[in-house]
Image (cartoon, rainbow, N blue to C red; front, side):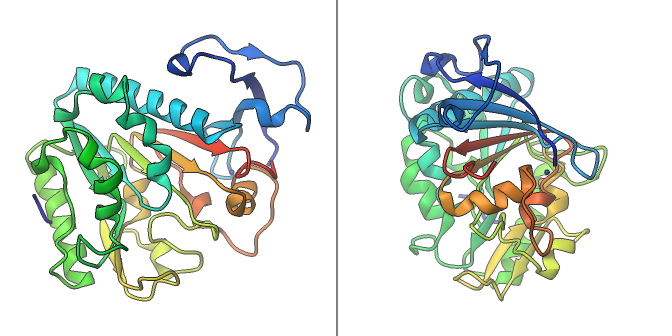
Length: 302
């Protein structure tokens, strides 16, 4: 293995499609949106952020089952589109509860129809612990995803867990630059940072993404591709993480957020919720397409 966001213009659609045709069939448009119906709806919300960029395509699901089916369909379609155009599909995973939402992707028909041989897998952030440690994002991904699909081991880029946090971050950035040189990974013409095909990103209850926490100086990192943190407010303290310039150079970013404890930061990012400072989730603004996959609990304050 290699080492190395106010005023939403909403179009509301009813999620009554067959699970395998989510996102393909024309939606049934409802004339109104109210508190009685919002939990049965898949919502497409679009608005301008303060940056002038769209908040993206937002979908709200009444069950985790439907969210997982829609997410699997989204990833499968994108994988097919990208691999029809080039030989690699570069995918970045976060940790946490993301893999529960990816459960349908490792089941039929998706697991048998995706060309896994073209997938190249990376981590948005990683805890600096051994790969078999319970806190390892690699172990989480392996147990719940990698062990169930046929991605070539050489296409899975885990960190070198024998190094210090600083060393592991430098090593991982060196790995990415090597993959740029070999044509596996492309560079954004707009930013000069690596351009991944898809980032699958979760969010913490405090609004953090990757290992980029509210109020931390790393939110302002503008030159490094990968950096490290030794004072994470969430254990374990030592981690490496992609920086916002890398996250925001992506071709596609899917924010996958579930649970009522995430409702406040979602409200701040997509609605008119207030917070004392900018949350990391509000800083996710890719040059490509942004999609939100929310369950009804995470969207309960919208």
